[in-house]
Length: 373
Image (cartoon, one colour):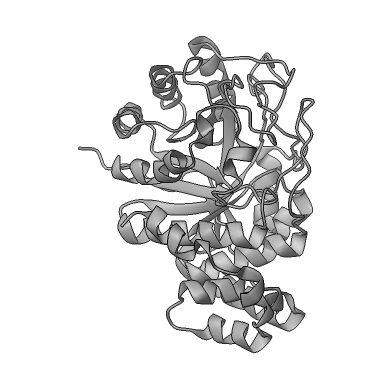
């Protein structure tokens, strides 16, 4: 069975009808259930769960589960954009190939300059990103970049276009140990309209990519939906089911989710979010993830404002970006492109570490060591 089979099983779920019947007593029962079912997860995502006393109960449970499974630690990482050249026409993205933005790509020498600057900040975990263009940034280019970066940091994750399984294995052999891919939305029906141009419009290929990364041996596999493209509760529900499938099927990989909300981007393409996602919605999604999957990693990026990010510490988040830059070349001497989106939390790595400490948690720069063969 693939995750697509699970998706099809729940695809026809009438969320509105289910939520109309859910009471706060149902949410409390779901919190207390010794083993959480998908139906319990759906209950935790219901509007009834936003009643103050119920949300507080979820927060207490999420806090206890987070401390039990992760301790009082927050892993810090930073993104590194290698390129913003893209062949897709995603209507909500600043990298849309039709947007008249400044494009750039790093040479190997420039990648080394970026790596030195990042390492000097103390960061030991990075995620490399590209626009989705196999012609501009082929797997071989990315592999060469990884090899350079591994001289300066301990962990390199990739967030790129979908690859074949042997290509994921090749990048793993080059030193990449983490993988991130956003399904963007799990609504298969609207996916073609959101992705009218380019390979990203292949819903099934994108859906299967995290599993290929697990099979290739990646230590960390991170998934997520861009909240706002469709109903946020629906996308959160399917992201959670996807994470559970990967956890159950590939215990050798640490499975994680990100919870980004759509934000303003560069370029002429205008996109009105299909669903507004308030702060309380983001909090509910995080609490529901933690209660449903206690060992799930949860990432909050600098899309969110500093004050909100600080308040989320202890409620489920395990990993946070710091010193983020969305322009190509932004860490070194020369900015070569426009950014993908506006960063809201602009704090440096040092400032972010101090904020984590003020909440009584320990900022972690390196959280695992590979076993040498």
